[in-house]
Image (tube, rainbow over all chains, first blue to last red; front, side, top):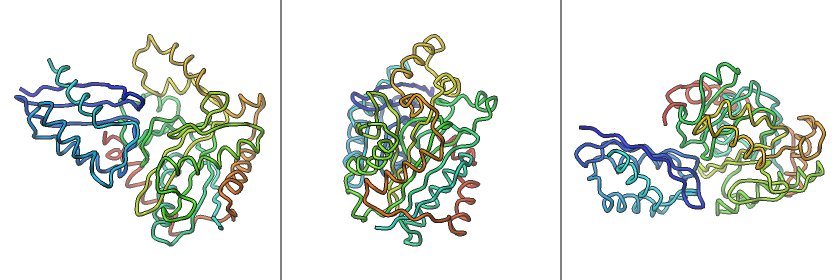
Length: 97
Length: 252
């Protein structure tokens, strides 16, 4: 069964993060990350959402993928942190219950 | 250094964002010179940041009722209600001596023009990272920047007046119960030129002051110019294909 979880998360010292995760049997189907943060280049956020799709929905996997994304050499982010994205994505799992 | 100044007056939001992006692309191609543009919004509009959810942030029915446009920007940041303000945009190659590589630093340098422009009007203000300018602890200006094709586009608002109640009728608030509290909070945190000076300042006077402010702060010479026909042509395409396109505006 497909489950949908939403979460609004205020990044400490940062902006507001709104995340939606669709998953089925502990596998992430789709992630949507929204908010008033800044990421350069902007299009790259699509890559993160795509990278998270199809992944086993456990903290370690999510943290690895998010960490890898934020360490890309061309990436600049303000008001959003890898930690906040991981926390928000995992809070969506809680919200599904 | 010489820089082109574009005074395009009031346009709708789609046109405003289409022109900014078109200028940026032409500057990026080395066809157009570094450009500062000063403009207003008619009809009023709500712009949302690149990463925001449209229907999550904006009351689309209310926008229709209040004849207010809505659209997604190519820059990040938050939702902005544009009505009584002057908006600036600056498009300049990343390699220009004026622009620090560091994005944070570049916000500060460009916002220096606004601070100097406000000083011209008799208002003392300061920059607060990442992208705000405050007067007596209250926000009077916010900016957003993107970098594409080794070109910086930064645009931002300078508030001439505020209508916080109207703004919150157009934006989605977490709960109706908290709406009054939210409105009074924002009134405490946001100010405007009229409110600081306790008089009504004309759009043109703010435009003039900001142009002077940028010249002085960036040590540049502004020369008034016009949009080229190619810039206008591309702007029209961007208006149609992007800013008026529901697929773009509803994509998140």
